[in-house]
Length: 208
Length: 204
Image (cartoon, rainbow over all chains, first blue to last red):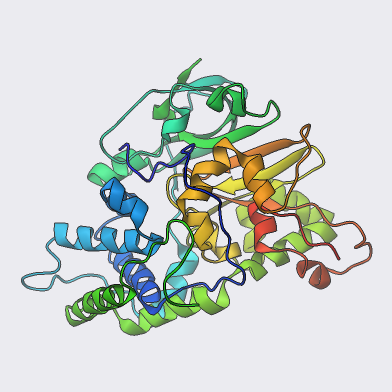
C-alpha cells in the first residue's frame, strides 16, 4: 500500500538528529510495548509481514506524528482486535515462557525456502521494477517503481511478503539484490558515482 | 533519558497516557494467559543489556586480524557470524558489505526499521525515524555530512535498502596506525555507526 511508511526519497523532515549516549529504551512503556509485541508474535496468530502491514495501516497523519513504538502498539492492538482476542472467552494460544526466550530468539524465523521454480534472472541481467500499486502489503518501495537496474546477486527463494501478509501463504519466490544507479532513481542532480541496492522479489521485476 | 523527546518522528503524546495504555494492555494479556510477564522481562533484558554493537565489533575486529575469517565473513555472513554464537531473530540472513578505497556502504530500511539485531542490538531512534529513512537513499552524501563524514566524489556511496529479510552489516576500513593491535583492542574502535555506515571506525 502507498502508505506513510514508504518514506524513501521524501523531503522536508529536517536533519537526522542522532542522540548522544542514547539508551535502548526511552520510557518504561517502550520496554513493555516492545516485549508484548515479541511475545504475542510468538503465539503464531499472525506472521511478521502481517504485523508490518498492521503498522502500515495507521492513518498517514498519525503515522508521521507518532514514535516508532507507538506504531508497534497500534499494530498489536489492531491485530488482536481483528482476531477477537481481547473479548469473550480467552483463546488457547501457544505462550512464550521465560525459559524459552533465549531459544526462540536464537532460532528466529528464517525466510529462505526450497522451490522447484527456476530463477528468471541471473546476475548481470537488466531488469525494470514494475509500476505496481497494490492496496495490500508490499516490499516494493515507491521510489524504484518503473526504474531500471541490474541484478547483482541472487538470494534464493524467500517467503513472499505480499502473499504472506494477505492470506498467510508463504508462496516462496526468488529474491534478488538489484543495483540502481542514483541517477536512474533520482535524476541528474544525483551523484554519478552512487547507487542504491534494493532486495526485490521476482514478481516485482520484468526484463529490461 | 525519559520525558518528552525532541527529535524528529518522536513527538510524544502524553507519556503518561502511553504508560497507562500499555499497562492496561499488558494486564489484559496476562490475565487472558497470552503472555508471561517473566518472558517479557527476559526479552527486555536481552536487548537492553546483553545484545548490542559490542557483538558486531568483535566480528569486525576478527575480520581485520584474520584474513581467513574475513574471507568466510564476506562469502557467507550468517555462517561466519554464527561462529561467535550471534544468530537468530532479525539476523537470520546476514550479508557483510566491505568498505574500500572505492566504495562506502550505508545501510537503511526505508519501509520500516530492519536492522541486524544479533550483531547491533535494537536500532537507535534516528535509524527508525523519517529523516534518515527518507533521505539516506536520495541524498546519502548530505546525510553522511551531518554525521561528519565526507566521501570523495569519485568514491561510490552504495546504499543498501533492507527491503527483504537480508540484514546488512558494514565492514569498515581498519584505521591507520593500528598495526600490531590485537582483536580486543581493535574492537574498541568499532562503533555502531561504523557498522551502519554513517561513520568510519574511530581513530586510535
